[in-house]
Length: 430
Image (cartoon, rainbow, N blue to C red; front, top):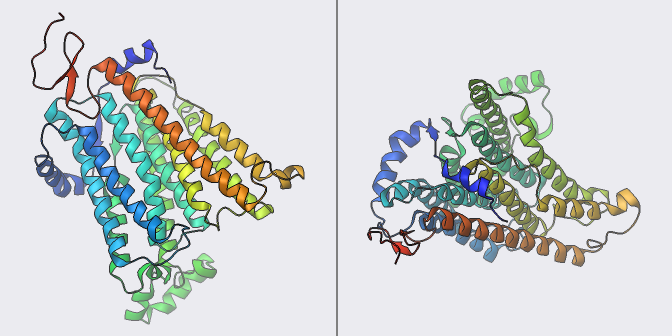
């Protein structure tokens, strides 16, 4: 895509603004990150640090694919889950210090925020894949729900930043406490004798064993709330409880984000309802994708309870990364809100085709058989991947050319327009 002159002018006005209310970040992780960044040489670009962090998570995904490429829920060696915890913590740490490295090297720019958020968007889906496997959810609608909720959290924060100009991290936020919680899940899965099976046991089992008399009270609560099935407190599996907690967190994040937007809009004398239209692209695309998956319940090819779920989640994640990166670009360039993109059209085709038998009484064009569906879903993932790489490459090249700040090296343009290492005095044009 081509960044217009108006957008580049808006880019020149960009200034990062962030608010971090996390106590853990301020008093524990903050000092650690301040020390950690000193271990990296000033010749290493901040975006390189961010990408190296993402590589840890990508390696984690490859270990999953090595042992369970069909995502059927095989129990993996304990060291694999341990490596996931280490990889995610490494990603969090490198993601946290890239801004500090940018200030050390004099390379702070809008490109840094775009690259950081782009990697975060990719990591969100990768962690859904890994965490769902560690929780024993795998090929299930719970994994689909986890993907939708996680991406909604990310989108809400980006939507909030677009309308307020500030990135808010609450007292309990995904990038800090949320990531550490997932690390703990990996560690428990690694060291517990039952592995992922531990998360299928009722969450209150330890309490009931320690205090058998509490069971009567729990039954009374079940009756009072009308809880049935595995939603009963004494039957509720730990993984379902975690998913429910995540759903509440998503709702809370949406409410908090909108509250911050209301304050910012009122301060600027702008209407407070129109920003809500910005949720339409996300929810519309999510509805399209869930309807695509729902086709298996109406006679279509199975996606959720099949190995096809893994490449489908990958497609969903890359399409979302493209969507949210367009929003971040609009934020840093002071551009109008992006309400649609080409991947939404692609997803719409996939949805209509998958539901063709139910809606139109005819066979799907490209998902008419399990083999055809395998090819199309896998191809869709690579289409979304290459589309995002294309977008990222074009945006990075244009922004670096405009700002004169390199992306993966500690260089800048001198007065003559030549790329030179930072610290080298500028030379006038010859």
